[in-house]
Length: 443
Picture 1: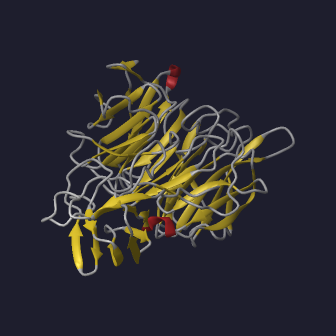
Picture 2: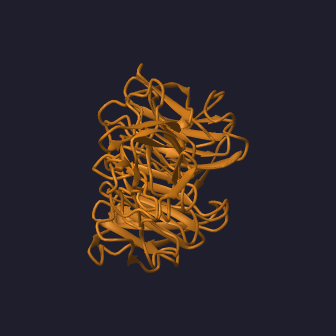
C-alpha cells in the first residue's frame, strides 16, 4: 500500500513596497500545486494555514484569503539569496531552507507540505484461529479490545467466538465460544455479508450480539456481556425472534440494537439497565426519502439519540426510536460516527462532512480517494476512516480537513472482506490471510 503523498509547486513572496518587476528585478515564486487526490490542496487558505518565507532577513507571510493555492511574490535583483520556510502548524516542509540564484530570469522554488499525521506507526497483532472467510465485529476502549468472529463449530456448521485483548490487540489470550450451532448470522452487520457493528467496549466491560440460548438453532440474537475482559460472557434476552443488525451504546447502561423484529419489520430496541430489560420501537418503512432497513450503520452518542446511515440516506431519533427525521447534508449515506451530542461525521460518497452543532450546520471535512466503508472519530477534528470492501486503505485526519493514508504493514484485504476501525485501531486481514488488528493508540 502506497501512503498518500504531497506534490510540489512554486510559492510567491512579495515585498509590500514592490508592485511590479521593473528596475531589472525578477520574480521568485514559492507556490504549491495540487497535493490531495482529486485536485485539492493541503494548504488552502492563509487564515487557516498561515506560513511564511524569509529571504536574506526579509520575512513575508501568506495573507491571501483565497481557496488555494496560496501565494507570497518576491522581486529580486540578480544574485544569490538564502531562504527559510516556516510551514503551517501541523505540517512539515521540504526544503526548510536553501539558496535561490537569480540570473536574468524569474525562479520557481518547489516546496513540499506534508501533514505531520503521516508519521503514525502501526503494529500488527494476529487474532488466533480466524482466517479470511471469518468476518468479524471489533471494538476497543483504551487498550481493551474485543473481536467477535465466526468459526467452524463442526464439519457442517459455524459458531461464534469472542476474543479479548488487554494490550491493544497485540495478544489475544481470551477466547470464549458462545453456545449453539448454525448461529453465524446472529448479528447481520451493515449488510447481509458482514458482521460489523456487533461489539461495544467499555474497558473490561464489553457487549456483543450473539446467539440466543444454548439449544437454539436459529439466527435469533441475544445480548452478551463480559465484565472481566472477555474471560467469561453471560446472556441476556432482547425479545422473541429478533435478529440484530447493529449494536451501539451511549454508556454502559444505555444501549441500542437495530434489528429485524418479530414479523420481519425493522425496529430499534433500547435498554437503560445494561441489557436486563428492553423496549421496542418499530421504524416506519420510510422517513422522508430514506428507506429504513437493517443494512445500515448506527451511532448512538448520548442517551436516547441514535443516527442510522443506510444506503439511501441518514435518519436520526432523539427519543429512543419513538420518532425519526432525516439528518445530514444532501447525499450522505452509508458511514457514520457521532462522538457527542453535538459532533457527528457522515460520508457522502468520497466527501466527508462534520457537524459541531447537532446537525444545524455541516462543514466538509475534506475528501478521500475512495468512499469509506466505516469511520471511527474521536472529536470534531480527529477521525479514522477505512476504505471499501476489497481495498487495503485506511486514512487519518487530525485537523478535520486533511487526510493521510496510513501504512499498515502486511495489510492486504481479500475481496468481499470488511475493514473495521475503532479509534487508533484497524481490523483487517494480513498478507497470510489471518485476521489481525493494527494498533496505534496515539493515532
